[in-house]
Image (cartoon, rainbow, N blue to C red):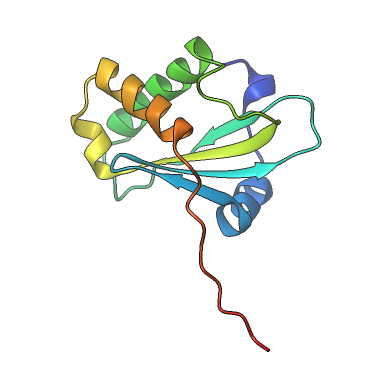
Length: 121
């Protein structure tokens, strides 16, 4: 289990990251990040009811993802401390633990997706 000090808990923090954070994505995950002044990176996993109506399934996926983060701190963090929100996609439910681990680590290594914002003169 990931220690409490590494978890993001406040809804306000999570909403801010979801709205303004950099985005990394793959076919299984969307990862939103925002740089922080804190000395360590902190994580949150948001799994909506759209993924599964059953809480047991959502919680199992959440526990597996937190365990992957705990076991691979270097691979699942960025160069500087960040607040990180992981949003699994529905396809992630079909993966076994080993494949889930591989896909999450690869998603962290991907380049961030930049949103092209219109420029006004």
